[in-house]
Image (cartoon, rainbow, N blue to C red; front, side):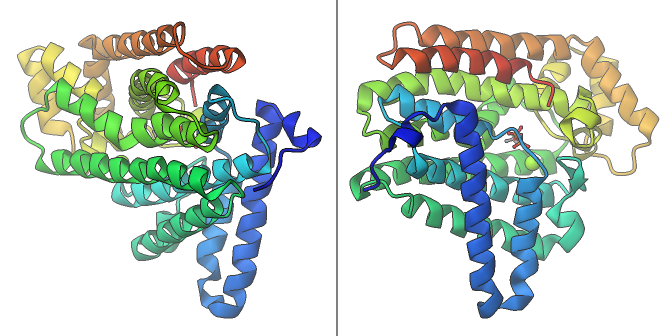
Length: 347
Ligand code: IPE
Ligand code: MG
C-alpha cells in the first residue's frame, strides 16, 4: 500500500484536483499507448475521452470523494487522486452515453462523442471509459480490503445511474399523461444524485476505512444534496445560459423530459397551460418560439420558483445534517460550503 508522504499529506482540495487531472491524463496516455499496438483503429475512442476530459467540467465528484475521505479520517495522496480520476471517468462514460440517449450535440461547449463519432462509437467510447475507470480504482494503490469496500459503492453508483436513466427515458418515451412529482424526484436521485454526490463520498470514506456511522452521516448529507444538484441541473438545462453551461437549453423540452420542474408545472399550470405542455413536450420539430412558450409556462406557473426553492431547501437540509455528524471538522465546513455552491451554481 502506498504510504502518504509529506508532499501528498499537504494536498488540499484545489491541488488535489490538479493531481486528479494529472492522473487522468497519465492514465489515458498509457491507455492510448497500449491501444496503439493492440488496435490502432480504435485510438479515436481514447481521443474522444481525452478531448471530453480536457474540455472542462467542474470535477465535483473527485472533490466530493476527497471530502468524503477526509470526513472518514483519511489522508489524501496519489492513491486517492487515482480513485478520484476513476470516478471522473465513470462520469465521462455516463455523459457520453447520456448524450447519445438524448441525441445531444453539445457538451462542455464542444461537439459530443455522439455528434462526432455517431451513436455506435459513442456506446463503445463510454464502455472504454468504464474499463479505464475500473483499472484506475483497482490499481489506485490502496490496500485491497479498502479497495474492495470502495468498489461496492463504486458499482452501486453505476447500477443506480443506469436504473434512473432507464426510468427517465421510458417515461419521456411514453409521453402523454404527466408524471407525479414523487416519481420525478426518485428518478433524479437515482440517475444523478447517486453517482454525482452520494457515491463519490462513500467511495472516498470507505477508502479511509470509515465505518457505518460515518457512512450513514454522509448518506444523510448526500441524499438531499444529490437531489438538489439534479434539480439545479434541470433548471439550468432549460433556463441556464448556454455560454455558461456548455449545453443547449431547448433539448430537455424537445425531448419531453419529465423532470420534477415539469411535474410541478403540470400540477400548477391552468388547464390551458397544462394542455400546451402536454402537446409540446417531446414533440419533434418545435420552433424556437414554441419552445419559448413552454419556458414561459414553466416560469409563469410558479414551477421554476418552486424548483429553485426546493433545491435550496434540500441543500440546507444537507448542511444541517452535518452539525451532529461524526466527521472530521474541516471536512464538515468544506461540505457545507459545497452544498451551497452545488444548489445555486450557474454551470
Ligand atoms: C452533469 O454533471 C450531468 C449530471 C449528472 C447532471 P456536471 O454538472 O457535474 O457536469 P461537468 O462535469 O461539470 O461538466
Ligand atoms: Mg438524459
